[in-house]
Amino acid sequence: MADINEIAKQFTDYYYSTFDSNRANLAPLYRDHSMLTWEDKQLQGTAAILNQLQGLPFAQVQHKVITRDAQPASDTVASILVLVTGQLLVDDGANVLSYSQMFHLVPDGGSYFVLNDVFRLVYG
Image (tube, rainbow, N blue to C red; front, side, top):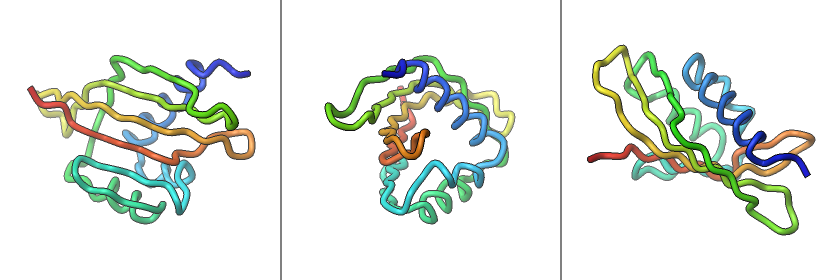
């Protein structure tokens, strides 16, 4: 079995570098049955998810991953749960925003897609 921590690192490195450069390029990571919870908004399907991500009210963003934890999500499918905590810098702002994000990655043809994605800013 592949090292799930390495898969989690490769996935999140790719996800956040793509998010930070061109959010439209995240489309292949989602499917029509994928779900995203963004703060208090729940969305399903690639089009709805990409619409949310592309409609965010900032032009530039930089993600900095602080922690990344991975666990197997099933005894029968090589799916992975990935929990990330980190910091965001948006539009060259001086204030750093803390966030947490959970991905449920499911294998698909030698790669993974995001079945579930939960994002929350962390206040306090």
